[in-house]
Length: 249
Ligand code: 8X3
Image (tube, rainbow, N blue to C red):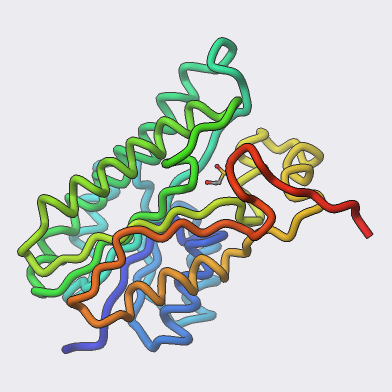
């Protein structure tokens, strides 16, 4: 086969950024990094030699352009773009935040998948990875807008696997728990660094590299092996409502 080519969304930071590095640097894949921020994309291109496409997954126009601009066959799509907005009870949550999270986490993933599926099926052995969350499997208080969008994204992923059976395309769900990235919690708490830092207090959270490494592992199994779903949490996070925190030393 040609050099494997992976397209990764949400590549400007966190899990997406690290997945570009791991697939390009450690696995010698050709990577196209997709994100909104040009400066981060340029940095990644310099660091890894990846191709870049500046695009917002919530824009149909951008994603249509992505499908046109992506070079050569596409073997892998890593749908990583997504995020959480707000920390409120359902009674007090912003409807706008609900819509934004659904648009980004669910519709954005479907939009990119639709746009690249022809290129993925053409190769006869494609991969669609969807980075969901443990929030896609277990609810928690104050996060319902995110939790609901991630449940929907996980359901979409399982449906996609059913629909693509027989096409040669694997559908892989990666469901991370608490991952300390530079932006996830900051975005959730609208830039409030104290609240964002408190999420990771007294626990060793996962890193973006832990998840990128897991994504790479699923993608490098023999192609008849479909890792349907990987749920990955830090050891001290036994569940959404059960995190054991140790006193800071
Ligand atoms: C992020 C994990 O625990 O904040 O998707 O829902 S969590």
